[in-house]
Each structure stands twice: as C-alpha cells, then as structure tokens.
Image 1 (spheres, rainbow, N blue to C red):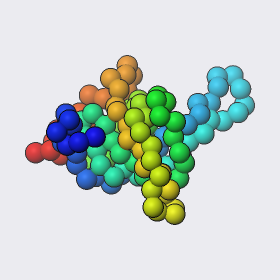
Image 2 (image 1 turned 60 degrees about the vertical axis):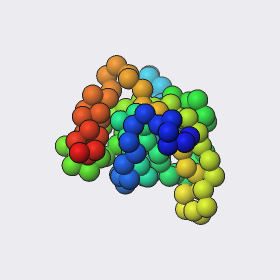
Image 3 (image 1 turned 45 degrees about the vertical axis):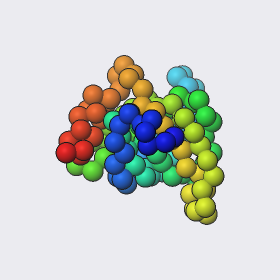
Image 4 (image 1 turned 90 degrees about the vertical axis):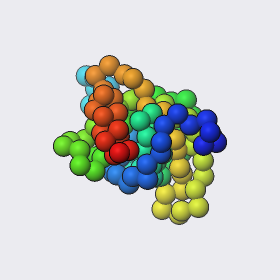
Amino acid sequence: MSEQRRKHLRLPVTSTTFIELISARVGQSESGKMITCSTLNVSRGGLQVILTEKLTVGAILQIGVDLPNAPRTLYLAGEVRWCLPNDDEKNPWIAGFHILNAEDSDINTWVAMISIMEN
C-alpha cells in the first residue's frame, strides 16, 4: 500500500506478539494453537509482524501484543490483510493486520498507547 493511502503513521516498534491460529474448543481436551512472533511496526489501525508460519488472508485472529511501556499484554482482534514470503530463514513470512474495533478487546488502550508513542 502506498504511503499516501495510509490513514495512520507507522511506528517502527519491535514487540513480542502472540497470535491464536486455532481456538481451543469449549468442553474439549484439545488445546488451541498459538504462535509467538514479533512486530516490525505498529499504527493505530494495524501492525506488521514477522513470523514462522503463513497466515490466511482474510482470517480474523486474536492477537496479544506486549507493547513497550504497556502495563500488560494488550488483546486485540485483527484481520490478516496480506501475508508475503520473507528472506529470513528463521521467520520466512511477513504479515499485515488491520486491527478491528472488537467488543471485549483492548482497542481503546491500543489507540491511546500508539497516540502517545506518535508524539
């Protein structure tokens, strides 16, 4: 996406990020599937991560982000907007997420923290 079309400033922030690929089912002994990755940049409306697995474009996933100076992990819902191969052997994928205004998420805290980081 060209910089002219972006709505929000991208900040080069590296933070540990958790993505729930498969949710654990209620009442079943099977556990879900969670991966740990890292952000490359963040904005009020999204984030870019570097990771070991390819994500499905259009998937809505639960995300936990440990932003610097945040008192705790922020839990968000995000839509995978794109996922492309990366030249890094350890992390062969880069993906972009659009953060959704989901109920019971930390979207308001996310926007407030990113706004502080922008200034």
